[in-house]
Length: 321
Image 1 (cartoon, rainbow, N blue to C red):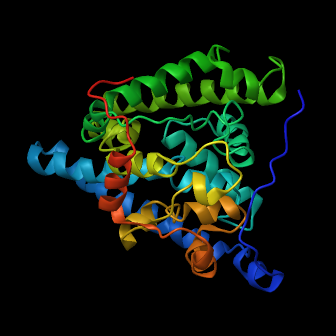
Image 2 (tube, rainbow, N blue to C red):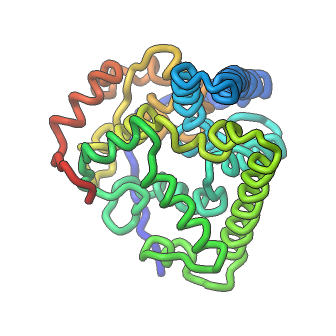
């Protein structure tokens, strides 16, 4: 089936302006990964200590902080940037950390690579981009789960991984992405699901048998603890924006965040900029924002501003859809 070509509007930049922005840096990429993993090491070690000692109040606080930072290893954070292959100059380094973070966050890198390519090519165009489907709905129940242990997200991850491991890929989006049931791409998805399921089962068993049960929460279940910050920022990228347009200024949202959240989010708060120029590495998006600010809408100010914008544009529901 022949796909349409969309003529996207991008704020014009000269080669002299764009070329420096597109330079990848092993140093900057490595520094971000080191700092993110170091933070997780501190929060994870603290949570392990307090939980193993039965100090429940501090244990709950530290595991919540750990989960909040851990969630950003996935597709709304580090994993996303690694998928774009802009974190390192080295393809091997990009691939290694992309798959490592996919495993740690219960995600499938082979599925996401194909799906996200469509998302960029056909952002918010009906049927062509089903990674984000409009209209989005703000569910209070989902937000409450995200403030604690996100059981629905955990169940969904395990269910999809199990189904994929059995060769089952449900939905019209999967059929569009992998129409050939015997293709190498589809087989990669299946093989990764088997590897991830077996790997996490082995780790979970080891944690239990060894008596190191807190590691279940520090590693195995960490992607589902206090996911609220990650969930809100991920939804806010396109929430309430316009579909079926050829202008990223109308279908994407840029948010100005405090330095800690911007770091954890790997600068994906500059989302108009990222869609206009997806080959610009995360560490140059703030500079890109400055260059095109004259031609883009005023950014949303902070997490509070994002929540107000989402609430204003939402079809709020007290139950999950």
